[in-house]
Image 1 (cartoon, rainbow, N blue to C red):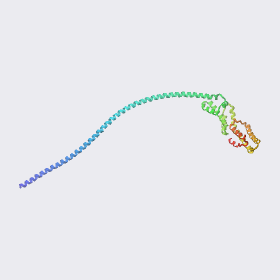
Image 2 (image 1 turned 180 degrees about the vertical axis):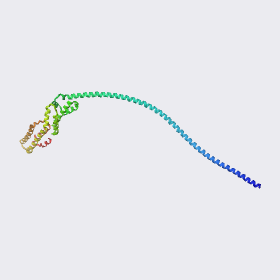
Image 3 (image 1 turned 90 degrees about the horizontal axis):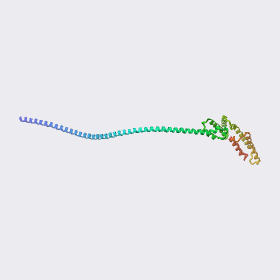
Image 4 (image 1 turned 45 degrees about the horizontal axis):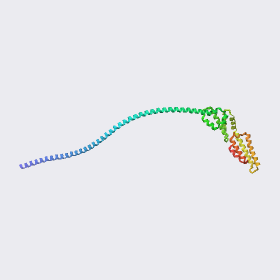
Length: 306
């Protein structure tokens, strides 16, 4: 009985010891896990520390660069201020120079204006002297005398320079009409132009023998021109009736005499003056030059010139 009790007590004690050891094992295992976890946290903390160290180094470098850039910026601001001060000084200098230039330009312009005025006065004086030299003969001579010493070229030339003198300008204008009417007589008859110039000649109110003579000549131009046409037609009719080629000289002379009688009668009947009708004079001379060596020479084509 005592033996069983002892055994039971031993078992109870053993079980108690085992339970104590089991508790100790649990604590040891828990401590091991805790140590492992702490070690891992420590390793993680070391990694973070290394990363923070690297970040700190980078931040330091950035701070260093930032300080360098800040120093450069401060230096730049100082230089900028210095440049701005210089620009202000230069701007002031430029303003002063501009003012001086404007003043000099004003002085130069004043001198130019004075010179221009002086030149203008001298030119005007010269023009007046030229006008006087050109206009003097026109004012002192009669219309007929001016006709004798002038031409359409001199009239047109002088008219350009003395437009400002009304009396002389009107005189030159009348002389121009006269000479243009003379030119008309050296051209083929243009009835419209003849009527226009005759009307303009009538409006000239000046004492002049030559003006009256020209008026008459211009007025008769159409009549004298038609008369010459009739003579050429008569001579052409003689040519159609008589052909003296190969005939004796006496026969040829007779026909030539008939032709020149027609020409002479025209000159006499119309009181034709070669200097008055230069264009018609050329036609008559052409007619005579053809008929003198050859009484049978054709003259009908001369009608196309009239």
